[in-house]
Image 1 (cartoon, helix red, strand yellow):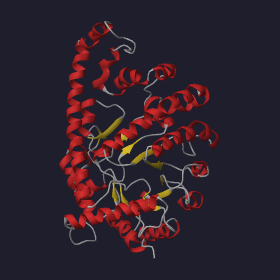
Image 2 (image 1 turned 90 degrees about the vertical axis):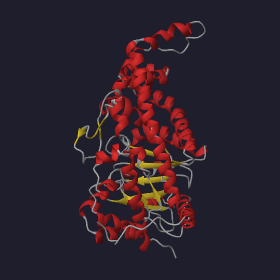
Image 3 (image 1 turned 180 degrees about the vertical axis):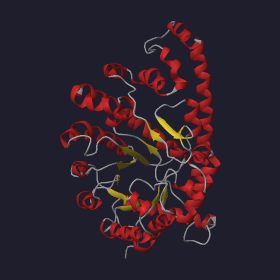
Image 4 (image 1 turned 60 degrees about the vertical axis):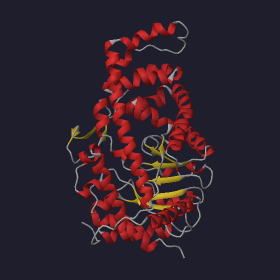
Length: 427
């Protein structure tokens, strides 16, 4: 299975505590653009640990104990400096199925058991509904978005706008909750909530177990760019691109409306999880989806406001720039020094070092194609190049370009982690 004769045993508590503190310092130094003792390397994957442990992707999504065991085995063997806890991105099967979520297909639900889940592009807010959203986002979310994206929430589309209904009108509007379909939906939603609580409790226990084994978490909350909020979840790909030209002012107004909401949600989640790293995956701001001029109007200013709001609350934006963003590098350098992590998927990380190296901590970017189809020597050589050039002087975390693909060769994954230890030490 791998180059080690046996999986290492869990460290003794005192050793694990020492390892945890050592890794935390290493990560903190890299973030602050200081030179740590060694280049940190992180483990992030949705399903490679499942493949490595011999379970299907479906099992990983539905069986919380099997997922925890697979991840525990992998982190003990790889010994990463941080771990992306798998529950928030993988242990979603039961709740997605119970709620009847329409924007994904996943293993055993529209896809074979050994495939990763897939996003489905839908329009969940019509163009003429911008004003409704801007007026009352919570009402729109509860009675328009959720009924369209989740089967369990469909009857809630019957609920009227409740803001302003006070005093003796409270008993009158309560009749809507007595509607048989609405009442049945609330019972179903409560059952989903019970399952979600069970999953989150197991996730919390596993996160604590990772800490007790000596492994810090790579993230503690998540957020999104305001433009992606509408492109990914509400307007869909066609709608959001048309809005760039046909509804510019409404789009800009709506994005401003969600900025404080996104900040507040991430701050609250990070505090609940007792951490400060906020993961922000980006989708629609890449070179191929909008011009640089559009990026400077519709994407970066609003995203930057979210990032600054997180920084003001003592949090660290961990921004994943999917796709190719080479034309954006100079623009996205306008952020406080040593306060963010930029993880690049397909951008030129060596050029990013020259442009951004004294502003943000860089992360990446061993190509998934190399981990899948390359050789251990190729992986090792590329990691060494990254460490020597991008890691020079600090401010760098080694990782795959977008997490470790499930199809990655075991020997290539181990080569990446071994390279960090073999070449990553600073003199």
